[in-house]
Each structure stands twice: as C-alpha cells, then as structure tokens.
Image 1: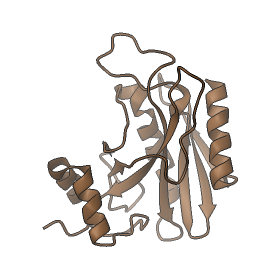
Image 2: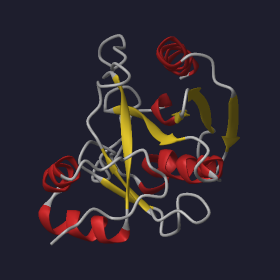
Image 3: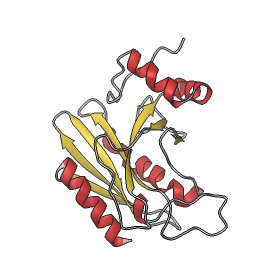
Image 4: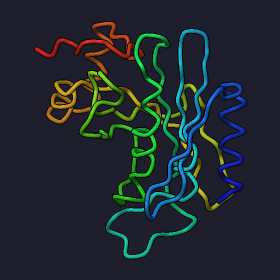
Length: 194
C-alpha cells in the first residue's frame, strides 16, 4: 500500500512540481487521504493521495480483491485568487474516500455529488469525472495490479448535473466545448442548456 502511494506521489511531483501545501483527512473506518496543492501560474491544482492505496471494488462483490481492481486519484484544477478554493480540501477527501465508504467505483463519466458547495460560495456541489491520461499520465503498476488513473474533476452547477443525468456526460462536455466554457473558473455560471 505504501509503495503504491510513494509511486503516486512521485508521479504527481514529476508532473506538477513540488506541492506548496498538503492536508490529511481520516474518516472513521477508512484509510487516510491527503490532498496536495500545486500552484502553476494562475492555476491551482488539488490532487488526492490515498484513494489508490487499495483497488476499488464492485459493491456487488462478496469479498473485495486486495490486489486487482481499478485504482485512481482525483485532480481538480481552478483559477487562483478568484474564490476561496482552498476550502475544497475536505470535500475532495470525502470524494476520494467514497470508494471505501460507499463501495463505489469512480470512473470517467461518473457524477460525484457532495450535497453542499465545493467551497464557500461555490456555484458547484457536484463534479463530473473526466477521462484520465491528459494532464497526468496513468501510472502503470506491477501485474496483476491495474494502473493508477489520475481523474480530472470538472465542477458542475446543479442545472448542469441535472442535465447530465438526462443527456449524459458526453452531451454535457460537448455543450461546454461549444460554448467555450472555462471549466477552471471557480465562479462561472451554468452553460446555456436550452
């Protein structure tokens, strides 16, 4: 477990540089989850560290496999200095702990809902999980372990989340693209959905 997290942290540092802050959160009955903050010019990136320590298990499996199964960490990128986004540390840790707590598999196309703003005053309470492999390459592990995927999180307004439930993740992403939506803007309005 520790070896996987050491490799994950090394990949984060190699790709994003040295973190300028980190916080740890432990929930009852779960492993510790850290959130590292990386500043890159006017963009702040928050990456979880700890979610990939164990493979995610299908909630229908009677016994979770300790080796095989998907592994992931979450990455959120926002514009710096526009909102108090540092308060996203605990919500991110909650999302990263959800596979252990709720027995869910977090994968591209999924919605994760907190039921409260991502940070104080945020117009978002949920995120769309995007495809890995863009900003941070997947981290290959020794077989039979699956690679660690670094999944970008795209904040969604309540209207966007509702629209995504009906139309699907692909449709929402195409709408964002068609309207030139800045998904890193921590105070952006909902994309037009009519």
